[in-house]
Length: 204
Image 1 (cartoon, rainbow, N blue to C red):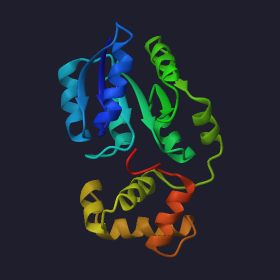
Image 2: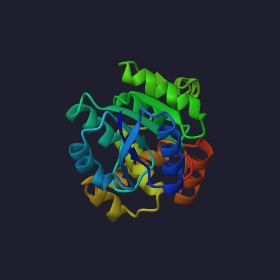
Image 3: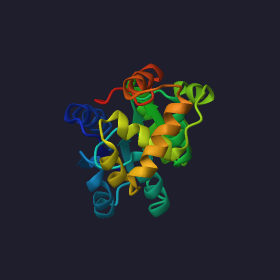
Image 4: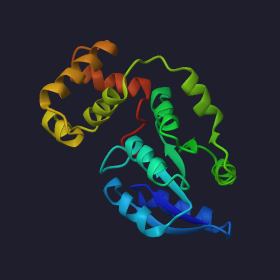
């Protein structure tokens, strides 16, 4: 089984490699630190499985996941995330991830998920399913993308460039996000994101 690991933390990738190589039939053929390089690597490696971290630099993981599933339907994708927000998890499921797991889960569950998806099934941990069922936000996909970039520290112009939007449109999204989350300024917004555990830690 040819596997690509996409995670921007070397220590986490090393742990995954040790786990996967202990199975003998699993070979990590590429490691990716940024989403910018992922499309090229997938095209080059002809992998069977992609293990993708949700919170990575270089782009939007949900959009890239959806692209990969459409372009390479045979490629199985397991999304890992430190975020426990049902909204985020639902986005990953909607993008056709074959499995969605939390990064604080047990290694045996990851191996089970690999087994399931390679048999053509989808796998979602109980926590993922429960958190999706508990969604209480009404943010659109675009608003979620904007919020993630705000949380990452990007200013309006940088967000606009990243998402190919006008600064005026970004400001409108920011206004709608703050209204829906019932906050009045950036500090309250960031605190709300932490409170809701929308994106986990920025280091996850």
